[in-house]
Length: 310
View 1 (cartoon, helix red, strand yellow):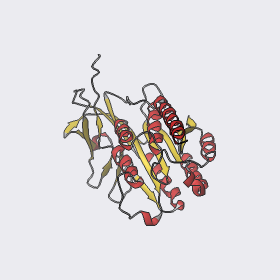
View 2 (tube, rainbow, N blue to C red):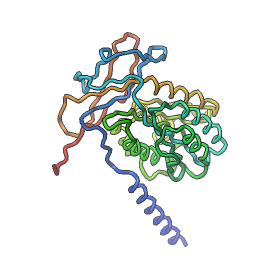
View 3 (tube, helix red, strand yellow):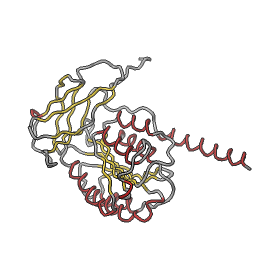
View 4 (cartoon, rainbow, N blue to C red):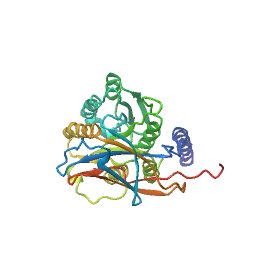
């Protein structure tokens, strides 16, 4: 009986692995020449500074100043994935979480598109990219809870889907973002944290994380595999923000704050002076020419690597 159970479990694991392998390509191909940055600028009190112009920004890559090639202020369209934890532990919170996500979706503009993904043991695209708020609302409210938590699988699939998100025009650039809500650590992903984080670093996507956490757990010593640690890592590596909600009632305000930030961002782009196709990580820093400006963006990117067969 034990041998039979192991055999069945192994077959199930292999089948699940094949499903993930089919759904998730291992290489992200964003713009090879143009480095795009979602940039948030606030003053020291956290108020968004939205009236800056091209001359106010300076971009440095590995300490070398770069020439700004793309600049868009607030009006740049957004491609967004709303990721909702629908695992069994979310059952008593799901209605409130859905309502907060619906109100967030209602903040989308006509030039924006969003996709809804629910994740538990499996990852399911509930609604593909659309700018129809009624369709997004229906998708969010249709999610049901049950199963374990495959957070890393969900983020990886969302990154891949965003890379294929439709543009307004053939030459248009979209800002890309993921907003993920979860109430616990990953328990069932086939993909490890490190591989998922690496994929996030290789994308041009800002990840905003919202972790529902009991108040007494917030101050506990955290291990590297625990929810608050990994959620913070995803946000910091991509220029997003990590939030911890100790009460379900806080979700509305957090989602609203993320919507405010997305509608106040700049899209900056440059072509690196370093033309080496060495695949190395390059550090990026953006400065804004205001004494009280606080700038947040992704801290770097991976250079393209020359195809040895070419």
